[in-house]
Image (cartoon, rainbow, N blue to C red; front, side, top):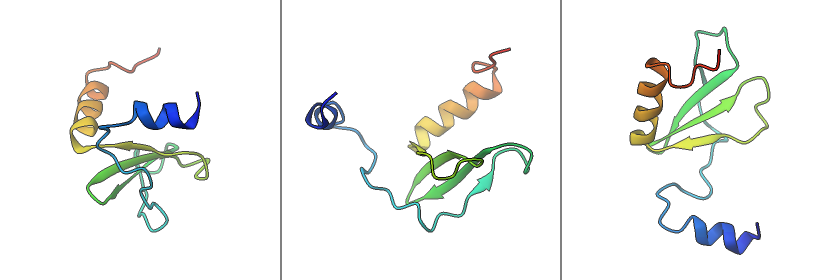
Length: 80
C-alpha cells in the first residue's frame, strides 16, 4: 500500500500520527509477569511488547481501550 493510500484510509482517524512515547511511563499489564506494557499518554492508551520495546506500539482511544478490556475479560481473545 502506498503512503498516500495509507494516509487517505486514515482520514478521520481520531489518533495522532506522531504520538510522542519517549517519556511514557510504561506499566506491566500483568504485574510484571508478562511482556505486555501500557502507558497513558495525552489522553490515549499505548500498548507495546515489553520484551521488544523498540517494536511499534498500538494506540487506543479511551473508548477502544474500554472495548478491548471488556472483550478480554469476556474471553473474546482466548486462543486456547
